[in-house]
Every structure is written in C-alpha cells, then in structure tokens.
Length: 87
Ligand SMILES: [Zn+2]
Image (cartoon, rainbow, N blue to C red):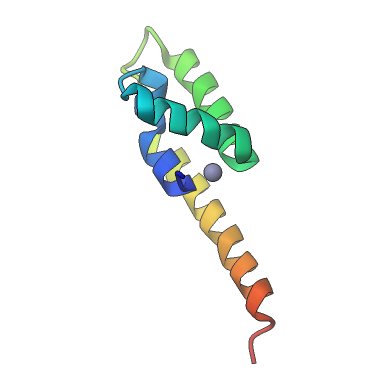
C-alpha cells in the first residue's frame, strides 16, 4: 500500500505517463481511497494541463511542499489525538 508521501513523489511520473503499470495501478487505488491525494492529483492535473504546450511538465515544487506540509500536519494532529493531550 502506498503512502501519501509515495504518491506525491510519483505523481509527476503518473501524470506524465512514464511510471510502470504496477505503480500506476497502486497510485490509482491510492487516489480512490485517499481524498487528500485525489485533490492533489486533480489540482496537479489541471495545473499541468494549463502549462502543457508552453512549458515542460512538472509539478511545481512549492505546491508539492505545501501539500506535503499540510498532510504531515494533519497526521501529526491525528497522532496527538490518539495518544491524548500532551501532559
Ligand atoms: Zn494519500
């Protein structure tokens, strides 16, 4: 099972259609189960389409970092909720 970090690392290959079919399947099933990454995928796809033809395709690094930070923050909050409030 892919993690969100794996997904973000592979998303540009996925959109470029350069990743192998197995990975592609894994990414597809991750999107189905993870609303977070689905939004990332959808947004990135639209961004890529906008730039298609004018510039080389790439996921903007700033976008990737911002999303990753948001995911990590959410996971951190989940962790804290599971272990209870800090003493
Ligand atoms: Zn995810």
